[in-house]
Image (cartoon, rainbow, N blue to C red; front, side):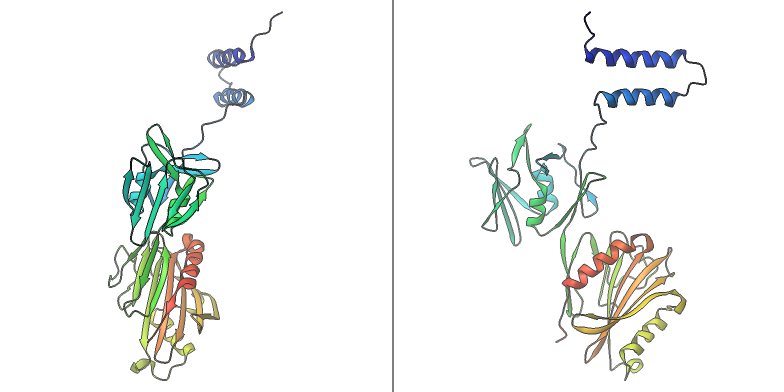
Length: 322
């Protein structure tokens, strides 16, 4: 006897299930029938369509007319949207099928079908060569991002490429220089606004805000000030605590450490002076002529990621007083 082809059985099975749903007594639950359908689909190897790959640059999505693709474990995207968002000026050499992207200090050259790129005159081997698909030119996104010193991470769960661009900051007095990645905004001289929550940043040598309202502040105080004469570092910290109304019961941690080659004191405490609970980390150190305070403040739910970011900034920080 001839067997019904396997491919023909599944449509019949699904039709029978829907007929069961129509004639089944009221106590047959719809979700049980749907589960039966799902099990049949899984049995034949059908799976839900994969979530489309997303690209986030500095907390904002990058929009493409053709969706990103993964080839040989490498994410490829349309070149123009990502070049433009990274600040690269674009030139297309039709004769040589070559893309040239340029910004201050960086020049990138890619050729369609060629796995070798040129970055600032040096050859770089690409994991996948640039290619044209349906009239759209695709390039490896990690290579492009890292060529302009951006940080790139892949979030497997959400299938998202997260890119944070590199930014350089300096304090007003020119003593502190450091690198930060992502969407930071300079908010110096802004007082108690939507940018700062309820925190007064006036008088800071540097005040910047991350897009999630994490704040990084740097203050300096001359030792010649009447209120600071003859103070030791521990006494200066007590002076800061008093000025910021930091209650002893709110202090989570207090320790000695080092920063920029100086002995320093650090406290971590709960800050309840905003609309929502914050966790602040305060570092103080001294030179021959000044006391300095560096403050990282973030909402409680972003504290862990903020702390990691703060440490990365401290590691990149340069200090020169003279």
